[in-house]
Length: 176
Image (tube, rainbow, N blue to C red):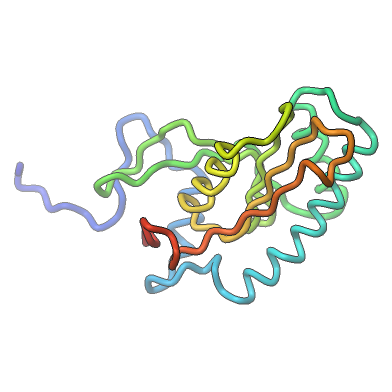
């Protein structure tokens, strides 16, 4: 090599800005334990999921099906904020490859209270690829709970999916 010592912390490729997600993720590591998978975090995520689903039902009740994803996303953020929840939108989700953080254009639609990943859709029907997308976001972000919401349905209940990532059962395991 060129005589420089390889750092233990992830390097950023040229032009990659340090985003809020990466800073929070790196701060939230604790001795190899994924802090988003503690019983306390799981309990809070479960509580939040009920609040998020309630907010989504309210948005769907007001707007109905047929709008663009972006409209539902903005309205859901507004509804969640009215309920006192912190929401981050279109969060960059880098991939850590060989100790380098690379921007691969992954974006979490919503991250609620830093715990629950929400993927908003407005499609004819949910397909397995949508489940895989949410599970990928959960794995890359080290989060436990994700909600997949398809607003293009007559009754929102039929467009909701709750997905959980268990690092102990993932064939790739936890990447800490």
